Length: 188
Image (cartoon, rainbow, N blue to C red; front, side, top):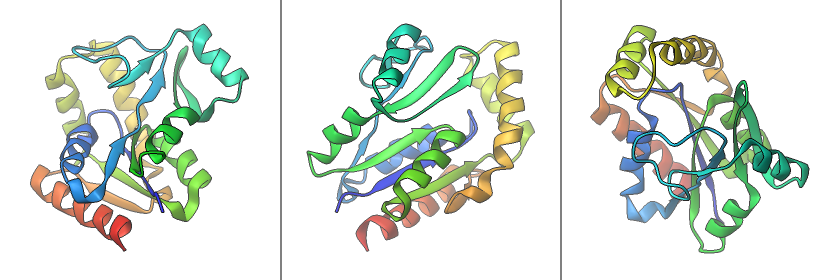
């Protein structure tokens, strides 16, 4: 039976790095679920690989057609969601799905898939460290960083709605803990 792994975290918590390391473990048969978004690409992001970059009109059309498993307006005018066709594509290959979604999306996916899904919250060691990571990433304006930090503070209060919490204070330790949790869930 195909299973679902949901990884959620405040922006800048290191979830993308941890997911990348998980994806290198071939025995887990994980395939990344590419989310749709209305935001503009950052850096070297590629349409269809990192996200499906849609206009707001295209996104709203998919909502009207009930094409999303879950979606959310994360910031004013900025939508993110998971297309049903993406799940069908991955499951048809016999793979397990790994999601990199915001906290609200993670909660929604866990409610939708129940025991078929493992939800993991990646927690930064502190809000101050999170701010430092976002600044060092160099992809966002000061205003955007402050928005993300404020949102992170709220999101961290929802970590109890996840099956597990992994604190990413030291990458190797967090990676080992996450790998053990995911392996136990997928291979049992």
